[in-house]
Amino acid sequence: MRTEIHQLSELMNEMDEKELSFLLNDFKCSRNKDSEYFLKKMAKKHEKKDISRTYLVIDPDEDTIMGYYTLALKCLSFDGQDVDPGLAEQMNLKDNVAQAYLIGQLARSDEAKKGSGGVMIDEAIKTFIGGKKKFGCRMVRLDCRDELIDYYRSNEFQLIGKNFKKDLNQMATFI
Image 1: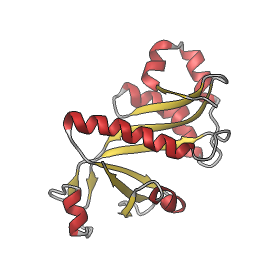
Image 2: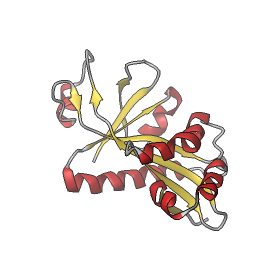
Image 3: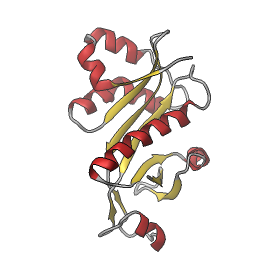
Image 4: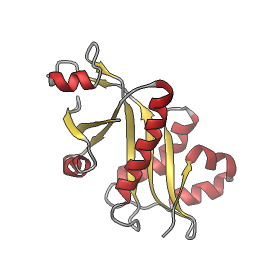
């Protein structure tokens, strides 16, 4: 199966609203309904407000979204948390804050092949490496549920700790 990656904002300019809504609403991710909701209801709003950029992995032969990932900038704050000194050095931690790129969403459709998540992570990292060359920042972070820690570790992320709400795990890798 061949796929293409398209930035949502470009599709918003190229497609009429009805056609784009049909494409987005066709995306199914039974493993994570929150990710499905984000793509269908929030992604376009975030694009318009310059909060994040969403990249769609599309099967052009079927005209379906096989997965997507959302990228943004979001600092990682460590108020009151102990951070390993070596890790703090690597993160350029200053005043308990580290600058970071964020993989805010990552989801594959129910029809996507196993392994496509890793491909999307690689594409996200390539985008961030381009940003690093232009304006710096070496850390890429994400938040995930407990059951995804091992998956992200297999993709070279390391566990930093729980977020402030204690409902998600903060993970990071360095580029």
